Structures are given as structure tokens and as C-alpha cells.
Length: 419
Image (cartoon, rainbow, N blue to C red):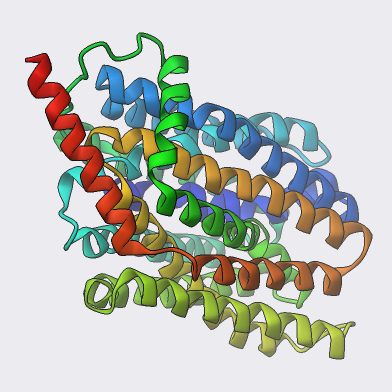
């Protein structure tokens, strides 16, 4: 249900409505808007990178995962509602609100993922992760239906009229997270005798522990690189669609198509990922990303000015497939590699890797797009996925799982001796 709830921020604030409102209304200059949006989005992610391992270590030690999850969600809800205050030309107010809102959302995403190993087994982790991802897309479909009907009935077709939708996003998040706040229990955790007293010491110790998890390190490096592309597409999907002439209500319908494709993909992944294997799943989706981004690049090279709108609608299906599958499969790998007594800690590193990837990818893509051109930016985007696939080929899932099991056995020995 939390996956369903926070989809309002992902969809309306990060991907669909607020980027266009910020670029066209709050800034009013397309080139400057691309640059400022990439700097604001990447800046917030850089701050998340600094906070993620500290928050992860703190919550593991003090058993406050649920408190942090709900607390960051409530802060994000409040800040999202405040986006209605962003008037035309007031881009600096928009950034001042969006940056902390995105920090709260991203930290909550990390904490949500850390619950995964405790509610699954190595055999079911892929399916359960995909179920959560599917719930997110179900939420997205329902929310887009609300937005489409509202835009049609109330005549809110122009981006200048979209501010009430930011309040709707906040209310959706607040109401949707109520079941999580009521029913989810704080995961059990056993404290190690003599464990470090501070979160900072725990982070330093966690970094030292990583040397015993070589496959996790290899995966995080690969994930870091192809995460450049995934995060960039999330932040710039609506802007790229607008570049292809998809605007107003058609932009909402395009996002609806994207969400349907992604949701259907997540459902398929939930059913078949554990049978196909995480490795095959990730390689397949990386191939889809490469083909989709490469097709966008080809269109821009062949038809640089006013490319046909229908082409982006067609390629959008590939983007939806990529978005619907790569995230849940990647999250499953971390859960597969993480010892149960350090799940929040390791998912903190996962979140740090993803957010740092977003910070670098979004910033580089946005600046290249603003100052060099769309074709160069799309070429950079495609290269992220190509290199990420090459690096992922070096990851050995069985070896990574054995590393996690060795760490769990060592942990049980230490706890037993402590008792």
C-alpha cells in the first residue's frame, strides 16, 4: 500500500506535471528550465546520497524503520502540498520546496525496500518485490484516471492550471499510507554485543563489511551505471515527450500508456521472475532499454526538427517495459545478497548508489541537453545502459548469495556467544 501511496509523488511531481510546470511556468525559458530542473533534481539526490547510509545504520541499530518510513512520508506530503504556492516566475520557491520533498521521498523509498528480506525468502523475494512494484503502477493508473477526468471536466489543460493537482498528489500520498502506519510491524532485529554506539561508526563498519560481499559491490557498480539512465528517464520523461510535441491532455494520456505498459510488465515479472531467474530478467530489461533509447537517438539524428509525435508514442511502450521491470529486479538482487541482520544498512548503500546515479545522470543529461543538444543527450543516455549491461555480466548471483549466508552464520555465532 505504501508503494501505491507514494506513486503520487513519483508520477505527478517527479515525472509528469511538476517538471513541465516548473520549466514552462515557474521558469518560463525552456533552455534555462532544463538546466535548473536537472540541477535541482540532482542536488536533492546528492544530499540523499550523504544521508542514506547514516539513516540505514541508525534504523538498524535502534529498530526505527517504521517510524522513519512513516515520518519521511508525512514530511513529503506536507512539502508536496506546499508546491501549490509556486507562482509563475517563482522557480526558486519551487526548488526550495521540491528539493527537501524529494529528499524525504527518496529516503522513504530506501526504508521501504529494507522491509523486503524480512517478509520474503530467497525463493519468493522476486515475486514479492514485483507485487510491490505492481501496486505502485496500479496506484499510478488510478491517479492518472483522476487527473485525466479532472483536467477534462474542469478544463485544466494548460500547465499554468496544474497547481491543484499538486495538492491532490499530497492527499493521495497521505491517505494511501494509512494502512502501512496502522498494520506494518517494526521488523525484528537482534543487536550485536559490542556494536558501535553511533550511526557514523556503524557506517564505517558497514563499509569495511562490504569487502566480504564482492558480488554485491559488482552489482552496485553495474546498477550505479545503468541507474544513470533509469533516473534520467524518470526525471525527464515528460520533458522529452513535450519535445516530440506531446502536450496538455495528450501528455497525461501518454503517461497513462506508459503506466499501463509498466504495470503490465511488473505483473508479468511478479509471476515469472523467480522462474526465469533474476540474472535473465535484468539482462532482458537492459536490452529493452538499449533498444528504446537507441531508437530515440536514431529519430533525433534522422529528423532533428519536429519529429513525428507517433514515434514517441510507439517507443514509449519500450520505455514503459523498462521502467516496469528493471526496478523490481534490481531491488531483488540487493535483498538476495543482503544478510538479514543488515538489511536496512545494505539497502541504504543500494539507495545511495541509485541516488548518486540519479544525481550524476540527471545533471549530465540535463546540461548536455540544454547546452549541446537533444541528440548528444540521447546518445549519452543510451551509453548508460550499454555500459551497465557489460558490467552486470560480471555479477555471479550464486556466489553473492553464499557470501550473504556466510555473514548470517557468523552473526548467529557472535549472538550465541554474546548470550
